[in-house]
Length: 524
Ligand code: HEM
Image (cartoon, helix red, strand yellow):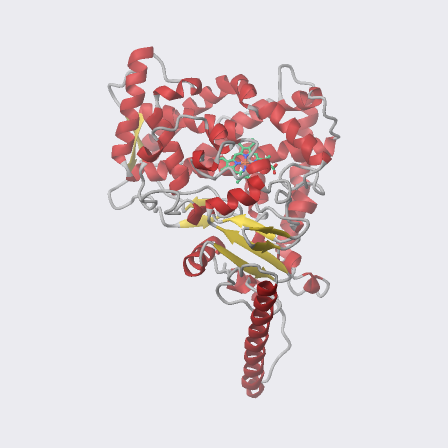
């Protein structure tokens, strides 16, 4: 539902007599225009006085609510259009808060990497702070400081490239299971939506290592419950849903508080905490290595609540993003059979030489596979806005003022279509990345010119799961392409690459069905 409709529907206005509506509306409209004009003129004069550049304010910005009612059904799409109209840096007014959105890689790099010590804070979000992160005790929503450093270091102690080597047996097994399930469901039903299957692939790897838990199939009741909690968590992290954060003056009158959202948050808090606390307690006594023991032995002391939010975060942050990325990858490849053929030729040649599929440390022998994964992520990014950064004091970069406590986001879709950074950005062209066999982790930590894409964010806040995500994408794609062709169910039913579903942080393709058809005569 449109955000504006949602909010307006929840406001109970007093009855107004029909005859009185016209003058009331006219006065309101005139006041709006006068107020906006006054605001624009005075802020523009102030900036010029200080020698600062103006950041355009796009679309319809109303008094008090600002852009909250203008963001439309899919805010990421609306903001993309505003970038086209107003340029690579724009500012939105979300009630009392300022939200600056940028699609210029050079400015983003300057801000988040060069000025990373000042621009790596997180803006306050009600749900993220109070429910998801247990009061800022996790990684993604903790402010740079002791707790964040400790949690990030603890997470990296189980997610850094060297550690991922320990997970390779289960990554290999789960990606093979994924390829087989996609073939089996296609044979059974004539087609399959890969979303839940990709989700099961990731959840089995992360929960397997985290808590020694795996599920056999997408119909497993516990898998359904856990994946629902994960999907709900991510949905409520969306900036634009945090109405009472932007308009706190309305909270006490109960006008704009979405009661349903509150109920779901509460339920989620109880359900999530019960299940994951139980997982943690059980896991501490299980045999063999797992994340809980690794955290206990990492030298960082975390109490049960802290372990809960950190470990749940690794599950939630990884599952939704990985699943969305994999689901886009299959949808895109269904449109590009020539790219599939090239990738399959490369895998077949490797198998003929070595008698097995390649491992991630042999990736330089399959550069086209790496290029396909990178190009799919560039072509259809995983999130609309990544995770917003913030500043705790005013910061000026390139003549632009980033005011204290503002939200600062990259607009991922238009950033990855920036013609100054990508030649013919509208074209799906894996070849653009053929010479880049560095891991995405290395590319993301390198110079701006060496960056392939920006899906994992920037600088000090770079995604901690980047290496696990890339390794899993690598094995999943190879297992699927070595065994099957990805085809439309019928020629008129190709996945819609322009239809998108806003899932909070991530942006998924609209649900689709495709066929995974068994390849014969392959050297597997
Ligand atoms: C394709 C998969 C993934 C994508 C596209 C992705 C994307 C992102 C982005 C955009 C950020 C914010 C970066 C910034 O603020 O500049 C982030 C942060 C984070 N991600 Fe990921 N992610 C993925 C997979 C994972 C996985 C597999 C895990 C863990 C198992 C994970 C855990 C985290 C954590 C803990 C943070 C917070 C880092 C911090 O604030 O210091 N992510 N991710």
